Image 1 (cartoon, rainbow, N blue to C red):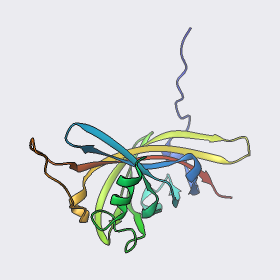
Image 2: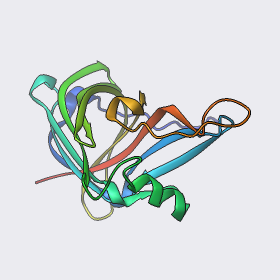
Image 3: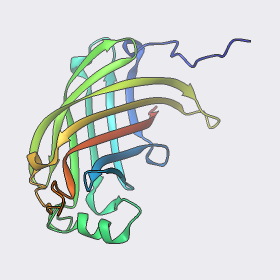
Image 4: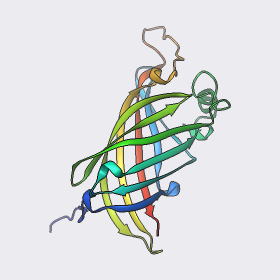
Length: 190
């Protein structure tokens, strides 16, 4: 018996239209090293976004995502409060994190690189995220959906997220490098 693999039957060049992020079926998260020995995962519970996709002419595509900074969740209330504070995101002063796509390059039938401006704490830097196309399907409610997964590693200090604490044995409490993770389900608009 042969196992079947879900391979997209249509590629990125076949996608066209406007898609809205389905936050209830998507995840925007991050991973950072803690105390130099373990990884801590977190996510943002509140976000919205949309993309207009032109697979035949990716340069005319657009993407915009807005994340509510205070929705950060690492499954530890004390850590979450610290992340919301001025030591990190300063959520009271900077209530949103934004990502606006500025460039789109189809690498192959299942990979697109999205370059964009990521703004955190009022600081904007350009990042490029490779996204793997998970395919498209019609859900039981008649919605045309697409799925993508991507990740990129950044240095948090590039956005002024500088707080840290030295460890007695050497090293620091929080790594400078943070991996941003995106698991996206989006619904095509009529």
